[in-house]
Image (cartoon, rainbow, N blue to C red; front, side, top):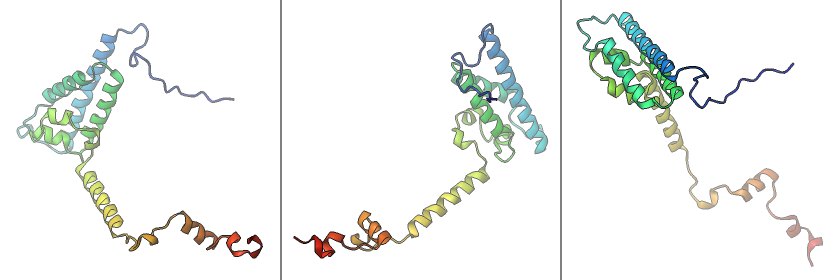
Length: 179
């Protein structure tokens, strides 16, 4: 019995089926985006016990700004819109990234958040770990001692000699090959 394979081909019109009104699909997607972002903000408010008087950013206003910016950048392709929204939502819901808290406190504005690259949507802790790993690998590569002479650099001949123990050709050594 053959397994049914999942098709990886994207539809031309970004997931809109025949008979669907593209405007209705976009409206539903945009509404879901706003709802997801609002839930993310309220989750962070609840987790970090942010006092409503202390927060400078309104979750509803921030959500509206985010969605309008996202739509203006990706209005031509719904699948790219959804993909970027998912990445932003994961970063927003993660308390370690502190994006939601800094947006609510006014330390960061929504335009800055919207224009972050996908690689920058990680937590500060993860950024430090990546930087430390990079520095450690750089130090390892620097401490590796290089050969002092050019003849010490291995080339194909020295690799063959080391592997097979051959220092001279058999024709040069064997008397039968002399003419």
